[in-house]
Image (cartoon, rainbow, N blue to C red; front, side):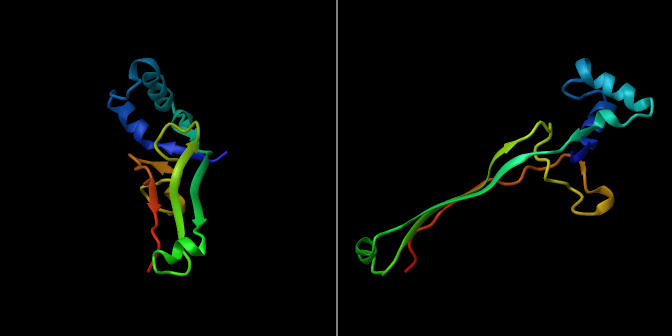
Length: 123
């Protein structure tokens, strides 16, 4: 299990303004005050469709209409699907970069950009 530390959740709980303060936040905070950090550690495991490309090579007769010998149409996407029980935006993101001491800590993490690309034949 890849563990992720939810510093963002801890900070919201410390200010008593987390989304679930009345149901779970108060319990998490009191557990933390008793010396246990477990409420702010989550399973960061995930399954992600990171890259997908669909391509079609046009027949030479069709490509010649564009003044080229070959042409390919392609559609690409990045970060299209993510399956995880992790509560933050993306278990792969850390605002602290790849420093070993703080690699698995989330503080208001930003989601990785989803992207798509539609190529047209090059001339």
